[in-house]
Image (cartoon, rainbow, N blue to C red; front, side, top):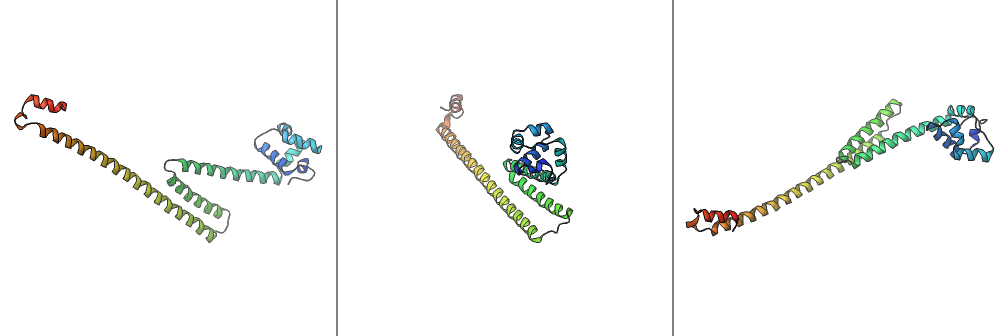
Amino acid sequence: MARPRNNITKLPTEIRLRICELIEDGRTYDEIRADETVKTALEERELAIHNSSLGAYLKSPEFKEYQNVRRKWGIDLKRRNIARAFVEAESGSDNIAKVANFELLNIIIEKLQSNEDLDPKELRSFSTALAAYERNRISAAKDKTEKKLSDVEANYQTEIAGLKETIAKLTEKLGNIPVDNTGTIAAMDSFVKGE
């Protein structure tokens, strides 16, 4: 928290968070003081925030913690948006598996970089979840492929039935042409016209 003599520290947490948001959004000190929520809180408590107070607050542990939380939240939000895009994409399940593997590697790398111990239970949990997801993804891909094959087979069977019907009609027409007239132009013309 900022130093106790700073008027910002006398404001409720939600107002201080609002000030942090405004600072992070690039608002000027005057815009921060003019913000309706901040202005109302200051008036209710008969406080004023000077530029020096805001400057000191920027260096406070509370503001730095806010920045860290907001940065992590931003990263998480980006990851969620990326994941949603993968899910909604045509080959979403394949992409999700790739991202999950990538995220697992990122977790391991982050732990190694921060000198944290790699908890075997946590790694086993991640690995098990990824393996289960991969099995489900493969099973879903297999089901999807089988359905496509079934649809293709049904289309071919329909085409074959139509061709058999056409062959039967043509065979019947050929059978109706007398043997002695097969060479005549009139019979051939009649056959071609479908009469």
